[in-house]
Image (cartoon, one colour):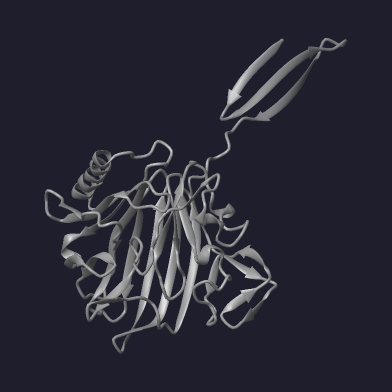
Length: 332
């Protein structure tokens, strides 16, 4: 006699065999049928070890992932020390990276796959990701701007990046359906003033957006975020029905491919002091506060799997997210 039972993902096959003494011997075979969990977010920080510093450059060595890092005093742009120059985070939709140096800009990795790719990026040549790869590529030209959703301080008609900082600490975490990058900047000096700035960036499964929460210890004025201005594309703006949330956005041919990309930042209206055009960016300047301020930024690339292909689709997507903020004051 054969009996087949399915119990919580485990198949138990029971066979009763009649023996010569008319007793039954029970043989049980177990097979685990639980499906492997699909990973939909990932964050990493990868640095070189086994090499040596020569001035501002780290020579030789191999990359190793770490959970946290105090950025060495020697490190700056193009030091070859941190793989793709800073921490990266991704969902099954899109990827981002933060330049963990004086530029402090956020760049976009466009993905043509819905699997996790960051562990492969920059392994076959330090900046190979600037050219199309099997997974996608770096698609945003940041230049002198903030990229998308990073932080600066607007002083004397200029956005000051992180050129003078006493020390910087970074940490990455991977949770169930969410990945997080935390950066603490100590002694960020601008306009002869110093502040400590905390930055927390989190991405969720099946989403394009990153939630960015910041807090500066001195409540300085001029703290801002923005979207880099490219190809004279017009700025798109909209407020939610209850006037509590709003977004700024751009859409059009603004990638290195070149092809179409949409970028947007959702912000709480009460936290914003001014929305204006800077030299390199469309800017949101926040009101001075020592409290936390949260906003959301995103990119939507036309080559993404089942991606957004037109400006009309992009605006419909943004308006749905704005409606969600209008109802719940947060995105999941």
